Length: 144
Image (cartoon, rainbow, N blue to C red; front, side, top):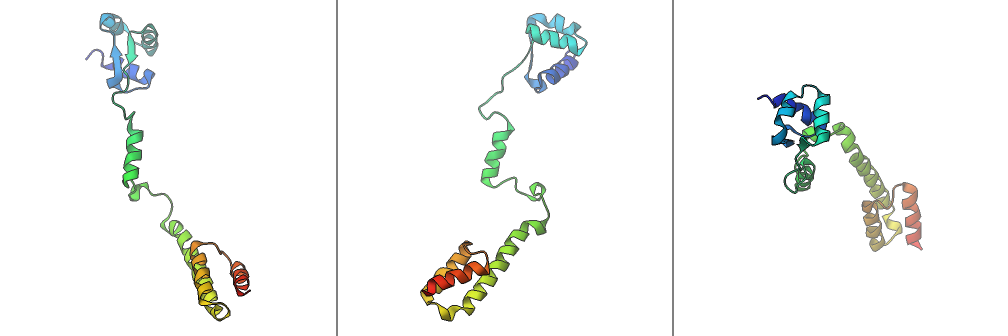
């Protein structure tokens, strides 16, 4: 119990957990006399106190988090940022655009063949056309 504070201070200085702090068993009397952080720093320099290496191959929590994310975990409501409406905004805009372009295309269906109509419809779905102007240009191209 005497070394509890020394271990805590050492962990802070070494920037590791208390479990990774190692004391040299031959120099315990010196460590026991260390009161200040500066004393601990001096002992670290001398090699009486060291940080143990990380166990295992995973190298901490970071890799585990990535693995969980790949599995589809860690995506609950607590991890989501931004308002619900802003997240859906992109889809709403896309839906509005696609519906408008499809409506215009169906109105101009009589000017083009059925084959060309479906080709244009697929292009709209793929997002190749973003404005009415683009659609009208493509319809005129297909007419020729």
